[in-house]
Length: 412
Image (cartoon, rainbow, N blue to C red; front, side, top):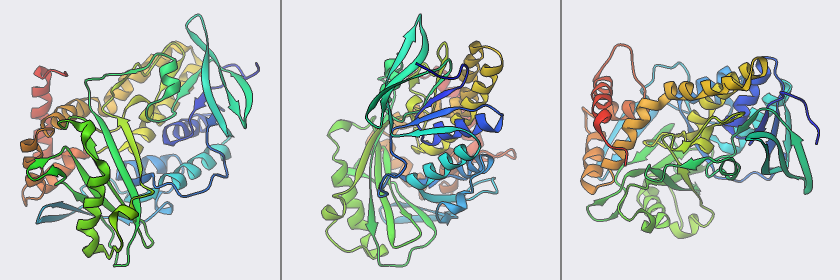
């Protein structure tokens, strides 16, 4: 085995891993990123979607302009049955919400990391950690099909949802906390496409049987729409919910407004799905000489499933902590835990309880009605996105009350 002492090794070149590599390089610390996918992989994944203004702001801090990644959207449309409500994107940030493909986002981030001095090894499948006396001392994997080992004293695990590498180091999911299942497809549209992010809050498995989740329709800047559905595991018999049926039903409903033609079942043949841990449900996120960030740590929002924003922010925090560890001792890695809690810990705790409540049909219907009302639309959206303002308001008042109430709420 060979490698540089105290050169951080990053397993996974997605938003969290790339953000950490850029942050490290900005502070004069070179790192090595192990990315399973080849550099010249064929585009075509439907993964990706909405970058929130906070995600765009984080990208700007990393040297990537979100406006170069896709069309900006300045309007949200909330739909529940016949009720529709349009609101401006409720943000205090000067940065836009953007629809971007995951492939393009990751390509730009890794190019930026490489430009700043990080080494990116494409085609490297990390298989097992090499552990000595409880510390990670290296990574064994396949690089372009060849057995390879790399030494390291500092490791960041950022290999995405259901991280196999994280589990090899002892991470586990809190089984009684929510997960999100999603399915999305790229659908051709012949109608005019507005710069609007459309959310459908009336997902049902049957009449009156509302589900905790939503569907979406996002413009991609060409003749395609990103259409998807997601539900939380708090739904009754969640494993039996047919996501393909939900997605086909959504496409059928929105087809007239968007000029979508063709059989919904054929339009979803290439749909891609995922099951993602959310709400900080993976522990631990800091070990003796390793950190876990992004979807590998279940850090996406339980309410929105907005994983890119959380991945970028947690990756930046990981980069800061790893920088400190290279200059002092690995013990400083434990600073990562309170940093992550400050990012979104209290909001995620409340969100887990809300997702449980909306797992009941009545809760789902009440939320859908409030979200499409004149008084509640902006409040619900601002709360879901944690877009809180110093000047206060209804969303801030709800957050303050909810944080008091959840102190007495069981997590089970």
